Image 1 (cartoon, rainbow, N blue to C red):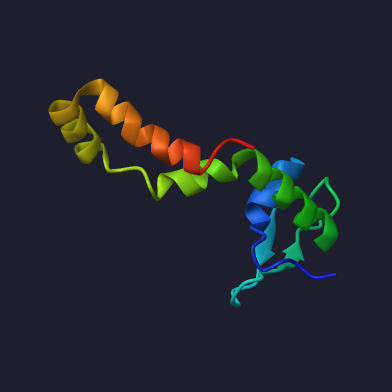
Image 2: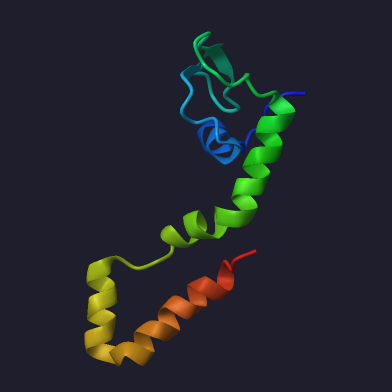
Length: 104
């Protein structure tokens, strides 16, 4: 099997607890692949299937955060929202985004 096009290898390694190991990724367009796994690493190199599964688990637990980041207004705009609409107005704005990307 190969790495899925949406799999972030760095986050997959973090999920597996192997992110402290030394490795190099290719610089091609996604999907990337590990081209070097340092022989001094104490952990074995994960398979493509393990990386895909680990990223899917990370995304299920954390994907809502990365999706929300792109939709939240800037801090300046949030403060302006609070000034003009009060805390309840600001909460309504944020709730819309949280409802759009709920925790899994």
